Length: 444
Picture 1 (cartoon, helix red, strand yellow):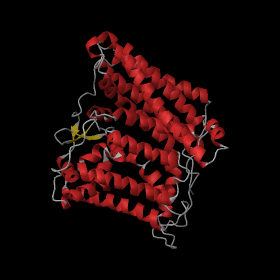
Picture 2 (tube, one colour):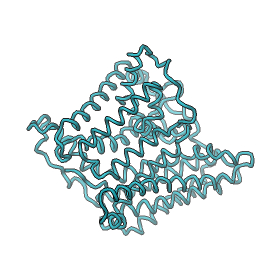
Picture 3 (cartoon, helix red, strand yellow):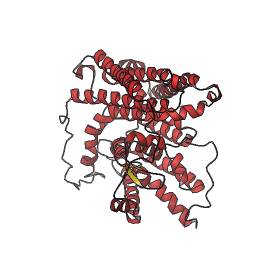
Picture 4 (tube, helix red, strand yellow):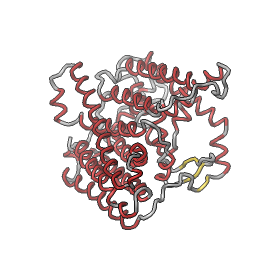
């Protein structure tokens, strides 16, 4: 059953020509921008505490110690299950569910789960739970003796962890082997537990790539938490205003975008020709260079656009480059989510079925625990044309929401006379991202 390409749709699967999809996506962005400039004069998403409070009984149930404990136990069980199956299960990824659980259920499923429930991995994260347990065993119940995180560290460890994982998924030839999954999980867990032992649970807020990813995406959830701890129902875009700036934040978001762009690049005919005659080592080197190049390209283009917009700030503020980059980087999160949905929708839909089919006999002992051992993946549940439409719609929707967020931030940042002109550099970047993104997905 493994591996399955991240995207199935091709140019011929889209009911309209590729150029029409690109023009349509670009037009949607431009029309949205014109409407925003005409009718959206003041910032509306600056207050992260706005929203309708959830009923008290629901708040108490969510925050109950028993609920938290059950979620931690569930996270521990999930972590233990995937490691045990990866280590003790069959070595073939076609019969071992661990690769599907990691690359599809966890990595891809983390996005819809966080969009719906907020920073769900923070509550489930078994590494955070083990870090808390280590602190308690050491007699430091509240982690008061833990070292403070080094100044300037920020999200950079999470950037490193993210790049390590996407390299494994997109570049390493044997990524689907259960033994690879086992070694990655054990190594990743050991590094984060060691850091957690030094810095306490606060390490996972900045250093654990998966928790950082879930938390950032969770800011787009319809349910959020105010500074006083109250849960509220809110406009999902309003939650982006509560993202805390720290070094490496821009790099992390750009790494998300760059890695998905690289995923699309690897499915083009150009990339196929480039790697067709190379050996495993040569292809790994080419893949590594390509991945890093795409991340650097996305980062550089974004930074250049923001700095071009910075020329419209008052002279006294023009040197605040890092602040301006961090202020507008939340506008890239809807785009990153859109790209993720576009790239991994078919993978979740089809290969995701293997997760519960193989779960009936995870150790290849002839079991049928859930009655699914004889099932087959249903590839006809959705047409390739529909997949292509979902992909294009996800990219366009993500960019339109990105334009909305960027405009809202711009009207609250730039002087009155420059509020429109200052947005042109980012608008050009988003239109370019849209057309290239559609081409990589549908025209590959």
